[in-house]
Length: 236
Length: 236
Image (cartoon, rainbow over all chains, first blue to last red; front, side, top):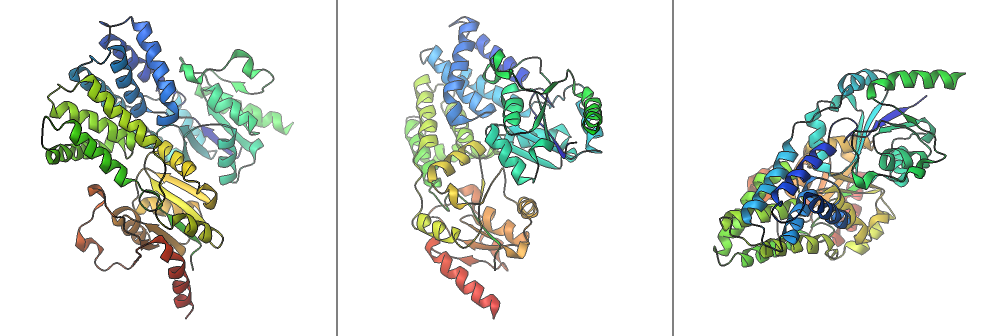
């Protein structure tokens, strides 16, 4: 039924957004003497969005945005020691152990025996390669594609590069905006496995999915059975 | 003779190192009240090297290293305004106009009519894609590969992915360490076009090139004639 199954990485295979959110909370605590936590997090998000087109995704850009926000919210009175604390978080985040989501290790290992698997993630090249290496999942993927943005054009280019027919390409991911909508636009199939929390930037309007056909699973463990059902259905 | 010609980007197609060096000099001026310029630049380089395995290459990591060095060299007394100045440099660097090297525009356009060209660069994915888009050279390359590190294994993987025979793969670049040595190790051919200045990290010991065969050109304009000579020689 599918010639290749592509998996998103952050918040699909391993925890990621929780790490950013935990750091954003520490950031709010650091500046608690200046502003309420909610306002600090709001300003941090606004700075991240402003910088996204220059920095792209990832921990380094997030750290630079935290530093910029700290200067702005303290009117320049932030201390060297406080900036050093923020830099320390970037190192902790970059070296944080990779925490796989429940069911990922067994399911990916099992699927790799039966299907061609691709890791298809957006973000910082260096950081994503490092996370894949630390995840221990690398050997299960016959291809790894790290892109700066996931839109329909990105998926078309990747399908062409790997000689894939859109209808036989399946994408599995947690983000409706990056993993599901653009794949459907490119003629592929998609399975959505929502993560506990979604970065505001990745959220889509509720009606954006109207008229779209894709599956939603609660846990990656359900994927092999879904694939079996889909294969049976397509043979009828 | 060659099925594909791959070009490095930074300091091969467009100026890059000069931008980093100019910023490093501004950084030394900013902290001139604390230390001599030479010592500041030495400490900055040491911080960059320490952070390289966490940050990878690129402007964002360089900026974080400048901030870390500023805190260290002022014993935490660096001001918010000074950090803001450093952040401003990162934005200027990320948006700096792409200055192509002499002869690049015409030569790449001419070669693209006769050969398959690839852009093969290391560095920050987002940043390199942005530079390629701004360079106006994008249409001439049939493939673009942005990698986190250039070693023999990287070149082997890329040759395999594109179905290339090593002996028919030519790499053109300014760095002996990244563009020449590892390509030769992978069985490919290489043309070295030195840049005016070389980042200390990219320098190799003089005897590292002993026994290696590769061409050195002064300017990319000489490449078509070199290719013609090489083709003639291989037919004899």
